[in-house]
Image 1: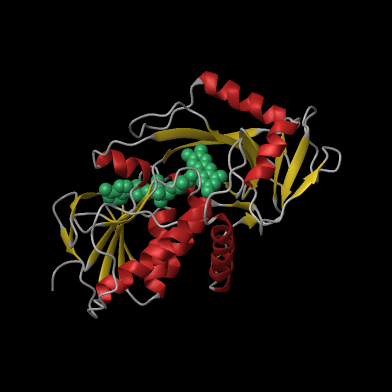
Image 2: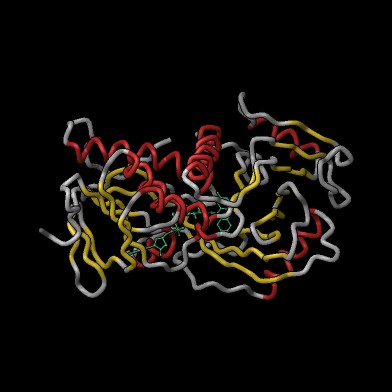
Length: 345
Ligand SMILES: Cc1cc2nc3c(=O)[nH]c(=O)nc-3n(C[C@H](O)[C@H](O)[C@H](O)COP(=O)(O)OP(=O)(O)OC[C@H]3O[C@@H](n4cnc5c(N)ncnc54)[C@H](O)[C@@H]3O)c2cc1C
C-alpha cells in the first residue's frame, strides 16, 4: 500500500498547512467521512494569533465583505461544536466596538452596512467600555467577538480525525506530495493551504503584511475595540495589536522595529487608557493577501490569501471547498472543472 493511503481505502485527501484554512478544510472533509492527512511544517502560522477578532465591519471604511454574516455565524457554531466534543476554545461573544473619529467615517460605515447585520451607534458616553477622549461615536456589533487562534485551529484538526504529519511538503501535484527528506504520500486530492510562509516557499509572487500583538497581563477593555489597531481580551489577559508593516513581496521572519512599537502604543492609547497594564510578551505574524479558493489548472485544490479575515471567512470558504473536493473524490461528476483557481464568495 503506498505511504499515506488510509488503510480502509476511503478517498484520501492531503491538506498542506494546518492554519485556519487547512484546519477548516480538514474538519469539513473529516466530518463528511473522508480520510484526511494534514501535513504541517509548524512554521509561522498566522492562525496562532493570540486573540483574533470576529469582526464583520472591516477597516477604516467599514466595509462588510461578502459572506461576512454567514462566516461569523459559522465560526461561532464551530466553537460550539468543538465545545460539545470537550474541546474548549477561549473566546468572547460579547460584541465588538468600532469607534469612529468623525461624522464622515460614520456615514461611510452606514453606507456599507448590509441588512441583517445587527449594529447600534452609541455616543462615547454610552459605549460599554471607557473610550479615550476625542471619538465621535462608536458602532457596537453584538454578533462579533474574539477567539484564541491557536486553540481554534488545534481543536478543528483534533476534531477532524485527520492524521497529522509534521513536515514540510517540498513538492506536490494533484495526487502526490513529496516531503522534505523524500517521503512520498499519495492521495485522491491535494489541497494547498500554506498561508504566507507557504506561498513564499512555493516561490509565488504575492502581497504579505506583518503585524504584531503586544500581550498584556489583563484586557484593557472587556469588549474588543478596533480602529487602526485593536485592544481585545485574550486567554491569558489581553492584547494590543494591528497589522501595520509595509506590504512585502514575501514572508519575512518576525520582527518588531522600534518605530512600529511606538506607532502601536500610540494607537492603543488613542483607543482607551491602558494605565497600569503590563506588557507580558509579543507575537508577530504575517498574513497573505489575494484570496484564492478552488482548483488550479494542475488539479491542486487551494484555499489561501485570507488576508485579515481568516477567522471570519476561512471556515465558510473551507466548507464550500471541502464540498467540492468531496464530490470530486467521490467521482460523482459534479466537481468543478480544473481551471484557474476560482474564488468562492
Ligand atoms: C497581526 C495579525 C493579526 C490578525 N488579526 C486577525 C483578526 O483579528 N481576525 C482575523 O480573522 N484574522 C486576523 N489575522 C489574519 C489571520 O491570522 C489569517 O487570515 C489566517 O491565520 C491565515 O490562515 P492560513 O491558514 O491561510 O495560513 P497560516 O495560519 O499562516 O497557516 C499556514 C500553515 O501552513 C504551513 N505550511 C506552509 N507551507 C507548508 C509546506 N510546504 N509544508 C507544510 N506546511 C506548510 C505553515 O507552517 C503554517 O502552519 C491576523 C493576522 C496577523 C498577522
